[in-house]
Amino acid sequence: MKKFYMFLLILILSCILAACSQKENSTKTETDITEEVNEEHDHNHDDHEGHDHEEDIVELDYKKLDEAIAKVLNEIPSFSVQSEIERGTKEDLANYFNADKMEFRLKVERVIGNQEYNSEELKAYAEYYVEENLLAIDIAKKKYNIEVTKSEVTSFIEENVKAVVPEEKKLYANSIGITLEELDNVFDRDIYIMDVLWSKLTPILMEKHPQAVGESEVEYMNRLTNDFYDV
Image (cartoon, rainbow, N blue to C red; front, side, top):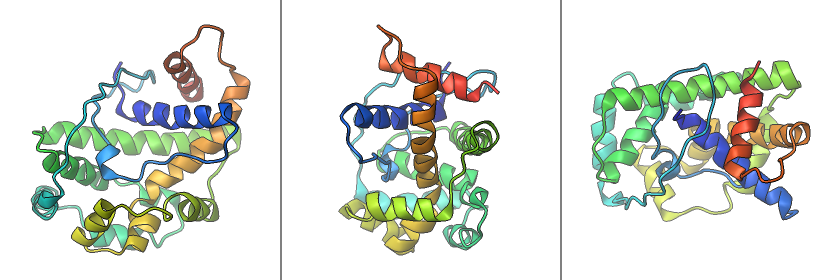
C-alpha cells in the first residue's frame, strides 16, 4: 500500500536508526522543498505500510521559481504565505499544519522540476500529510505521553537548520516574500515539529520492538510504523 507520509516517516526513522548505530548525536532533517515529494500513495487509513521509493533524480530549475510561485498561488486562491506567518504566532502546534501550504510546496516543486501534475492528486497528498501528522501528534501524546514543546522545536531549528543556508533556500524565501527567519521558524516549522516528535518516539519504538535477525531496515521501519498507528 503506497503511503506518502509513511515514506517521510520511514526516511526520518532510517536516519535516526543509522545515527544510533554509529553513536552519533546529529539528527538529519528535511529542509528543502525539493525533497518533500516524489511519492505516490493511496488514501486508505486502515493500515500504515511503507512503500517502494524510486530514487529518480529530478533536476530543478530555480530560474523558474518566481514563475512557479505565481502560477501555484493562482491555483490555490485560499492560500496566502502571509496568512501562514500570522497563523504561526499562535501557540497550538496544529496551526503550523495546513493542507493548502503543503499543496503549495508540492506544486512549486513539480513546476521547477518541469514535471506535470494532477492538481486533485496533489491536493489529496497534502490533505493526507496533514491528517497523518496531526494523528501522529495525538497518538504520541495519548499512547506514549510524548509531546513536542515550542522550545524543543526552536532549539532543533537553531542547531540543525540555521547552520547551513543553501542559495536555493535564500531564493525560495525571497520569492515567497518572507525572511529566512520566518521560513525556518514559522513557514516550515511543521516539518521540524515532526522531526522532533519522531526523534523522541523512535528510541521508544525501537526498544519496544527490536529489529529481528534477518529483518531489513525497510521491513523494520514498516513494522515500527504499523505498531505506532495500531491504537
